[in-house]
Image (cartoon, rainbow, N blue to C red; front, side, top):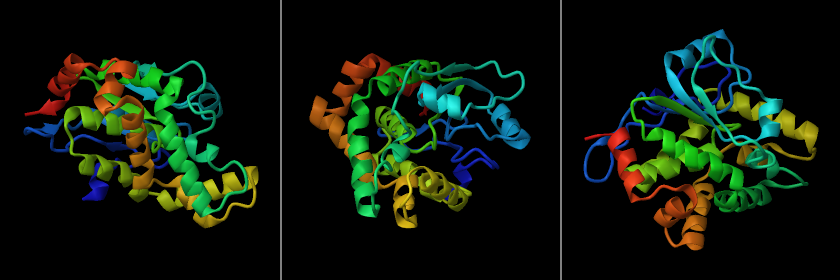
Length: 259
């Protein structure tokens, strides 16, 4: 069931396990080790207890300095994991907010998101964090959580790349990406986004906000296509930009796949 992947939270959006998918050649991605979400700035005691139970060794924060300052994540008391982040900006604004600049309608917003995804593989700050994301995941037995602002754009690309490395079928990886649209309290999040964007930019209707606050297969396909057009293949991008060569890909499979 779709909702079985989501952990119960009150104020952490989109917290879920992205393991469990079948991989080419047999086996499945391990569960209980790989988690993804939006930021934890509004987390209450119940949410922090949920995070604490994950026993995270690493938190990979794909946001930039300004985002982390605006929405500083809360941690469980006694949290001793390592938080990995880029000192600088990774997207200016979160991509869905960046796309909202200017007076846009739903069609223009959709194209803006496609363009933003196409540009994300070239963002230095994102690539810096992704290098370290893949490096720490080779440990295998340590749980990690990767997140950005809403846990859908930069996080979606990071998870899609890992699924590709592990041999998850692209359709299954896309299914995981699209789960964001079915996350608990998603309608509540969209209403909040309408208030936020309306106050900041003005003139944004509900249909446009839904495009910006959601995910669409065309968005992720734009990132996949951009990588292949720029580097020739996903493997070349992984190796040339993210230091994930054949040996590291095998190490990641050995650490994160149950055969």
